[in-house]
Image (cartoon, rainbow, N blue to C red; front, side):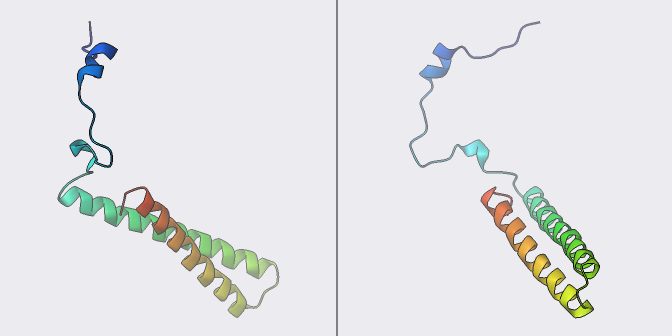
Length: 95
């Protein structure tokens, strides 16, 4: 069983794309798939932030903070984590 892999000489014959342009096949999913990827990416960010906020709330309560301070820490954690997650996803090209 043989595979048709290009040899280095054959690959050198193909012209390279000009600097600053992206190949046509790396544009990402098109249509409904792109929308689904964006929705799932945002849901993952929100769920991860909610889990971190719950952890912050439990930790601050165990350390003896008042309920209001624990809610404030959880809210700050939620905002920080969801913002960071969305920033990272944007830089990865998911959003």
